[in-house]
Image 1 (cartoon, rainbow, N blue to C red):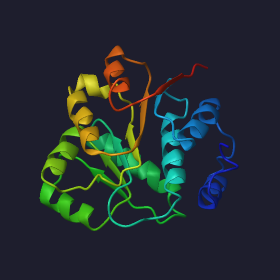
Image 2: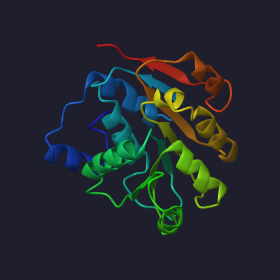
Image 3: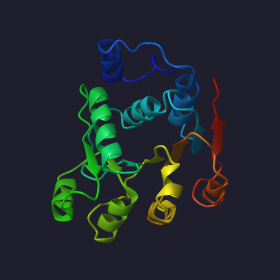
Image 4: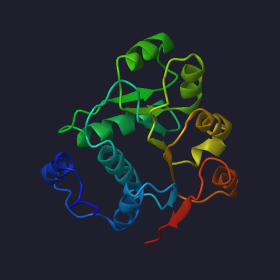
Length: 205
């Protein structure tokens, strides 16, 4: 690990795009995610956080679609972030059967419910829209294996930390990963609630 022990479809994709050497942050974080730890992964922009997220999710889900309910949920700040991350995921899922869906406010909620119902493995969502569709019984989260927040600083700027915090109340067993540039002391209550025994991995160049 990190790259030589990834599933074959991922290794094939990485070879095709000429990405064959892991960054230092990726060498640290990917094995920890693979091991199932709850994590606060803290590193500066450009360290490889997003790629670490994508590779780890695909690896965890074994590159294969399964039933209809999502197994990975990733929170992002807005529509642009959701679509950008979805596009980036699609670069790495080409050799897999995984289905990726972006969920955001600027799209008809009834259409979103219909599309999610058809089946998805990875949902990338804004907190407000995920909460709304969840409380309308439009998404089933009982099968979740991964609960991730990307660039988590946005939670405080958009006052959506409470909405993200409510979702774990409905999840049985799951791995939680928070990617951010700085550890905010307001995350401490997550460590004391659903992010049990969370490790704080701080990477500096």
